[in-house]
Length: 321
Image (tube, rainbow, N blue to C red; front, side):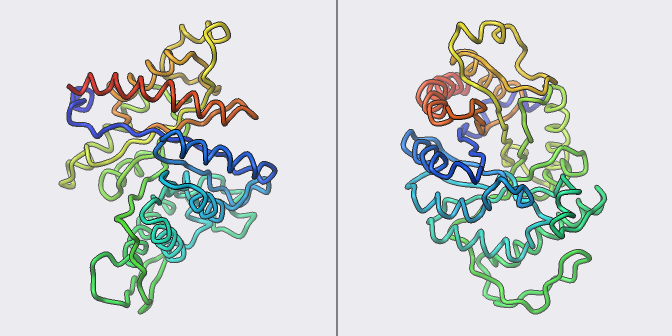
């Protein structure tokens, strides 16, 4: 179990938040993003479900939020490939990365809600087709980004995506990471072979054994393909409420990861313990907090950044020593 014993070699942890892009709450979204920026969190994720009529468009929203903040980075959590042509997506991501001087990363998924995707004109794919299309999309995106290369035109004769003597560029401001949202074994192996990180969808609802099993597949694939497993970021999505001791008393007795389809509710100390254990024992290194107390998100973000994160970082720092 090399990963569980490699705390000192693992990357420094990062902490961020998820903002739900409700079209009915634009003012609240701005407040939450500005608060996250002010209190020193590192990244904001925005869900990308174009077919959801109650959601704002993710890329347009990220553009506006990035212009209104100073330091915090952004990523789509995760961009829905069947609804986003990869060449156009590459252009959009590179453009925004240039305009923000390197504050954009790319979360990308194969697609999941196929009825909704098809209702908006997207292509329904089998799991095997979705993985194959995803791998082609990665190649198209990197060709369009055209890092450090003189050629200005590129071609790609794919089954699902094609480029024919296409003009590449512009290259992003920084080397953008592609983080893959997935749970299946084929995609775990693809992550280990090709991408920069694993976004574990709703980690709060995933058991420790499931997380360890998927981590093993990523690590084995990385090593088989000559990559360092430690180079691949492991992103956890933690849904819940940071509650006071009195109301969270019963949750204090729960194990860290559950199959229960419900948010995690706990005191500041419980959250710290949970995050530290996830880092040390499960190999997760990036934590995206999804505050599930509707209407209280801004306050939850402040508690997370000012009370939970510093204690978690200090405990992790001690363990790394």
